[in-house]
Image (cartoon, rainbow, N blue to C red; front, side, top):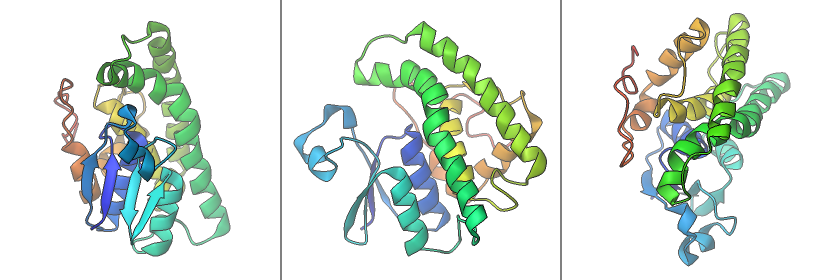
Length: 221
């Protein structure tokens, strides 16, 4: 049994979920209260983080490494280009979203508005929320610029870079923190990617205390 220990709004978990779903790998989702750091959880991953994937008799951690393992073990349909330049660009953009976007936007908006409440860490820091709201505009503009030249973020085919970006943006969209009217290219891109069958479980997520906004699961916004 393939099993993913995850937290529904974690963009790193969502990236792995999208990769598994795109490759039609059946997986049991096990919601993990990672902040409680139980001994059983820490045995699975001493780093105390999700996602944790049990696949092929192995326990895999770190979302980037997990996605690369899935890609090599289950190469079809491919989420990585066949040429070195293409693979470089995908990895560059995955790092962009999992590092820069995460630090400047996701941690400032999603973690302040949702994670703090769920984990009992108090109220949102308004300074961080304002900083995240400013930063996301720059990132949406950058994505729009990329999409002026490409069909997908890293090139002419959908790749793991698109899933990394969609994982972060879908988590933020759950709390209505994405201005989809800011850039038509980004809006069209997100409409395409969230219409894929792989996105269905993401759109079905329900977080107690945080109801979905009406547009969240609407494929036409």
